[in-house]
Amino acid sequence: MASADVIIIGGGISGAAAALGVVEEGAGKVVIFDEQLPSQRLSRGNFGLTWYMCKGANNPVYAAWCRMATQQWPEFARKLEEETGYDLELEWTGGAIQAFDEDQYKAHEQSIATLKSACGEVGLDYPVNMLSRQEFADMVPDIEVGEDVLGMMYTADQGHVNPLKLLAAVRCAFQQKGGVYHGGHSVTSISPKQDGSVTVKTSRGTYSCGKLVIAAGHGSQRLLNPLKIKLHVYPQRGQLMVTERYKRVLKIPVLCTRQTPDGTFLIGLSTEDAALDSSVTLPAMKNQASNAVRLFPLLRKLNWVRSWGAIRVMTPDGAPIYSRVPDHPNITVLALHSAVSLAPLTVSKIAPWILDKGESSQIAHFSNERFHV
Image 1: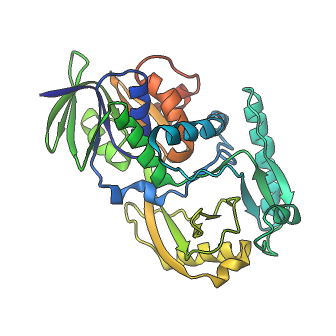
Image 2: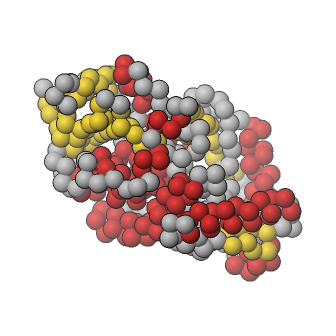
Image 3: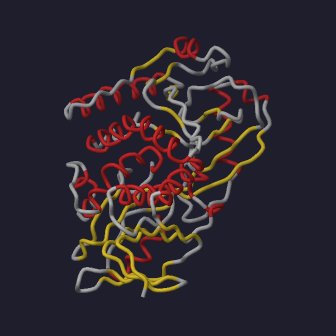
C-alpha cells in the first residue's frame, strides 16, 4: 500500500490551494487525486472576480473573511507569478455593481453601511462607496454607460483574474514544491482507521495517509455517505457568454460584465436550480444579454460567439464550509463557492488549520455543523 502524509481529494482551485498551503507548511508527502480532466473543471464557469464587495451582508464573519482574502490577493498573485512564470492576468482596477433604479441604489447604500460596520468591528476597512452614473462614466471614458444606469456601488480595492490560469499556477507551484498531482484518478472510498490514519481506495490503487482533505465539490457527499455525514451543499447552475474580441475599452469589471485582457467581453449573472444539468438555456442568455446591453450599449453591436454553463457548489448561507468530520479529526472537508476570491486564505489560513498548526478565529464559524438546527 502506498502512503502519503496528506491526501487531497479534488484538484480544483480550493483543493489545489489547500494542497499548496500544506506543502508550504512542511507537511511532507502531499498527493492530490483529481477525478476530473482539465476540460471539465468548474473553473471554466468562474467569472474570475477577486471580490469582497457585497459578500456577507447577513453574515459579518463571512464579510470579514472575504475582506481579509482580498487584502492578500495582490501579494498572493505576485508570488505565484514569480514562482511559476504564469501570468494570472490579474488587474487590480476595482469593481462595480450597477443600480438600474432607486430601489437598487438604496439597497446598495444599505449594504455598504451594514458591511462597513461589520468589518469595522474587527478592525478591517471597507472602502466602498456609491457613485452617480456620471461619476462612473468618467472612470470609463472609452465606453458609453447606458442611460438606464442610475449609479454604481464601487471600490478601487479589488479586481479580476483569469481563473484557469490561476488554477494552473497553483497546481504548478504545488508540484514545484514537491507535491504529487494525479489527474483522471477516481477515489472510490475512504476508510478511517483506529490509529487515526485513513485508507483511500482509488481506481488505480490503495493509499494510506495521516490526514485527508475532501474538496471534491458535489462529489464529496458520495465519499461522506458511509460516515453518515450530510454535507450541506446544493448545485446551482450559472451560465456565461463571451463576445468576439474588441479593442480594450473597459478595465473596471462590473458584477455581470467584464472585458478580459484579450478583448472579449464576458457576461454572466444567472442562478438556476437545475440539479447537475450544466446546459445553456435561451431565457437565461436573453436575460443576461439584455442587462449587459442596458449597462453598456456597445455590446448590442458585438457578436456573441460562445456560451456555456457550470454547476456551482453552494451552501445554504453562501459562506464556505471548513469542517472536520466528527469522530475523525484527521479528515477535513472544504466546500465553497467563491474559490477564486478566497484562494489566498485557503493557502495562508486553512492549510495551517488542516495541519493543526493554529486556527484563525473565523474558521469555527464555517463548520458544516452550523446547519444542524
